[in-house]
Length: 148
Image 1 (cartoon, rainbow, N blue to C red):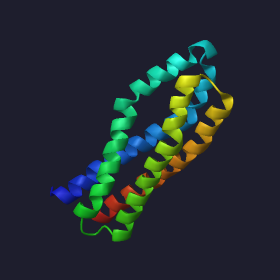
Image 2: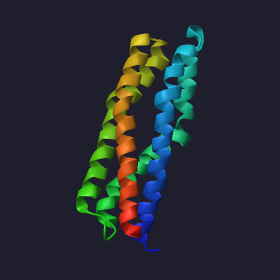
Image 3: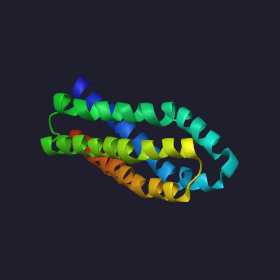
Image 4: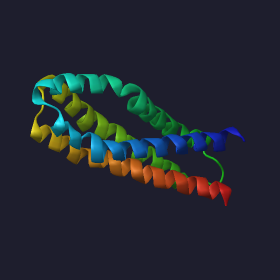
């Protein structure tokens, strides 16, 4: 397999992983914050923020970097508009992470449980969840174009 389709295949794998991970965060992990005892919440959040590196942060960074690489390694048969849309979706994911998710998680670790902050985290995280999902659908479509 040449480099161009291989990069797309790795990108697809990481996109699908991140999409599944994000749905778990959206529907299970963030809503369960309410179950953590208030006197333990700051410690829970601090540890959770540290433990996210391998299952969430590294795969997210890898996905973003691969999205940025796509214009340079675009396989024949994959339209430029699909590549541009992938880059745009990943920019949305990174922006939403920086603007809302990371800041809110850090505030919760620093200040403790706050229902309004958790609700804002869950609400704004839909931007990432939908963007990851659209990216997953798009990358599967891109792969399908290569194997048809």
